[in-house]
Image (cartoon, rainbow, N blue to C red):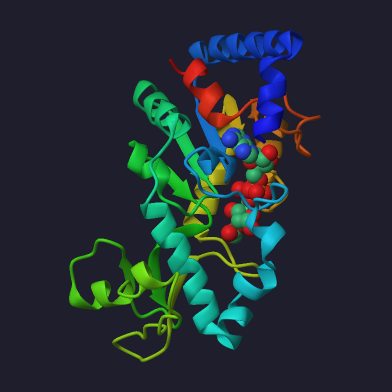
Length: 274
Ligand code: OAD
């Protein structure tokens, strides 16, 4: 990634193209009504959170999703799965939102009709000040009983909630005990959507509603290969929206969108939303 950025810095043609595309998007944003943004792991990359599919650094380049991100994996080996999420929880709490996150929070403040849809589970949009966020894949900082009795978030004050996150700080060195639900005794699990599970119904319905009525749909930092989220920009396009992609790399969406901006979220968004 770093090499690619340096190349663009040294490439006057690519710089000019990017500058024109940014000016184009700025103009479109100024004259538009309903704005919808879909974000993926790329928007948090500049905060230091790994993406899933980037070469070498992506989680799914180093681990198998079927070992860590399915209900079957959790039932088979709850300690390994819990530990991986506990380490990710600790990592997320040790980083800050980046200029891409804060630019999107700024945009929300300026518009009356704005929806931010995210596939990210790191809570960084909310920490940057975004208020109307639809979290399609859950939230890493929340856990729930596997049988549905309770749900706790990091920072909740009750002793039961605090106990759920007790092992997080030492999860890198020790294998923590997986906490149990104080009501039914089943395991607590991360409140994220695993492969093979349904997305939160209300969030996905509202996301499709927003995509259908969007005037401008911005897709930032997603490989656009995981469905149904990847369907949202196509839906917006089918319904007549202008669709703009911001990503350092091409994605399956790149050939369909109205405008593709090659660059990172942290570098492009603050130049678009000044
Ligand atoms: P991916 O890892 O699949 O894609 C990340 C995208 O971000 C790629 O297209 C990168 O080119 C781009 N990218 C990298 N750095 C960037 C930067 N600084 N600025 C902008 N873009 C950058 O992540 P997602 O598309 O979010 O699901 O993955 C979708 C889902 O797959 C995730 O929500 C997760 C995963 O399995 C669940 O956990 C359910």
